[in-house]
Every structure is written in structure tokens, then in C-alpha cells.
Length: 338
Image (cartoon, rainbow, N blue to C red; front, side):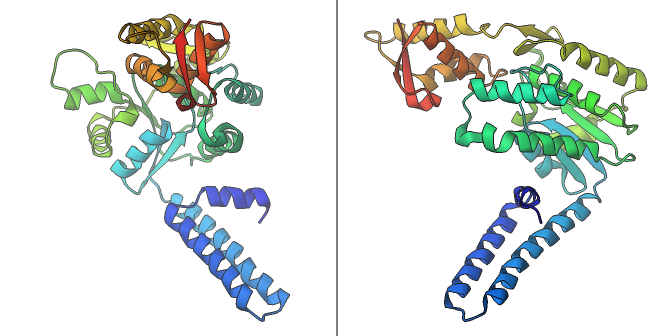
């Protein structure tokens, strides 16, 4: 196996398989320390570990060929809920991204994907070097999984009343434009309201990732409507092409459509929130960045805390906030209005 194949196979291992391989390697090393075997025999034993990794990777692919339906969803959290709720014959493909923020210009092309990756690396703080180590590989792997969907397999796209999942819906449908599969769309916000919300207060601000696996299963069983028509699919594809021409950084879901706004759109509210916190202090003092962002996120939870943290740093650079600490992540620094 080549190094990249080994890396991909390890990324696809379950937690139990990962622990099993780690134990196997540790035991092999301990045995080598005590062994009188020749170097050739030791090397053969180590090669058996790679052979086993290859076997598990291939068997995993064979098992996945037995699925009856493919589900596409934005994010790892809703994907986990879908896996627990729907069971074994459903393949869940989670797109490892948050489409409400960051450039999506030409994202269906390599140049657009590179542009987005560079912008995210330059502007957003993610833990453990995620953007450098994992993002690009996961994005590429997901595109490959979508490309490999069998032609007779029904596809379900899960979306909701927010810019992230609505943008994802358009992107998924464009990626699927050459496939003749039946494609179904489930809007979890609307389905959740009809099945579980008994009030008449209007549509809940619900994201797919906030719904339990059991509730998602019920939504799937009771709210799966007819597949998209060819006309519907062409309309969505045109909407994606129009949206992907925009150089905007922020998208909002308003009046049942995706609207773009400038990246400083939330700055005034961030400042107002800081001012409100200061008003409750005996004297104006530093505010933990995580607290400030948390309070803003409570109002704008559809936009993502990583982007809000970027805007706080931008306000620091503009001289609106003083800073104490190092802005490598929101928990490491505090701010106060000048």
C-alpha cells in the first residue's frame, strides 16, 4: 500500500478497529524486543499488519455496496444522528464544511475549492490544525464518494431553513447533475414542525444537527415526498451556478431564499453586545472572548462561532477592541471596548 492509501484506510477505520490495530502494532514491537528472529522474519510480521489493514479496508467497501439508499447532509453531527436513527442499509455521506460562511465562488471546480481552502486557513481559527491536516482530504474524499454512488441507488438530501444547509442543497444537486438517480429532498425544519411542534408560533429555528436520530428516522418514514422532477433539478442547478458566481463571504436564509451580505454584517451587533456586558460591570473590564462570542452566537447560531470569532479579531485589528492574551483561539484572550 502507498502512503496515501494507508492514510486513507486509517481515516476510514472505526474506533474499535483503530484500537485493535494499535494493540497489534504495540504487541509486535514488544515481541521484536524479545525475539531472536531474523530481520526478514520481523519484517514479515510487520507486513502482516498492513495486509490486515488492506483486508479491512476492502471488506468495508464490499459492505458499503449493500446499502439501499444514500443520504447527503451538511456536517458530521447530523450525519452521526442519521446513522444512529436509520440503521445499516443506509449510507450517510457528510460534507465536512459549513457553507453559510467563506467563499463558494466556483466551488464545483478545483480553482474554487482551493480558493475556499485558502480563505478558511487565512481567516478562521480551527482546533488542532484541522484545516491544514484534514479538511482538504475530507473534502476530496466526500466528492469521490458522491461520484461513486451507483446509478440505481435512491439519494436523499437533508436540508433545513438555514443558509448552510440550503447552500449545501444547491451544491449537492449540481454535483449530482450527471446522475439519473431518483433524488428526494427532506427539509427537517418544516418536517419537525409538523411532526413534533404542537405550537402555532411559526417555523422553528431548527437545524438537522439538532434533531435526534429517532426523530430523523420518523421524519424519513413519514415525510419522504416524491422525487425531484427533471425541471426541479435544472432549476436548482441554475440557482447554484448563479450563487457560485458571487464573491460574497456570508450567506443568510431570509424570505425563503439565500441572500448574501458583507462580512462585517454582524460587527455592530458584536459591539452592542460588548457594550451591554460592560454596562453590567462595576467598571469597564476585559470580557472573555468566548463569553462575548457565545452571547452573539445565541442570537445568530446559524452563522457559526468560528466566523464570529474572526469578526472579533477584525474589530481588534481596527482598534475597536483592546485585547489581553493571544488570539489563537477564543478561549485564550479577552477584549474590551476602547
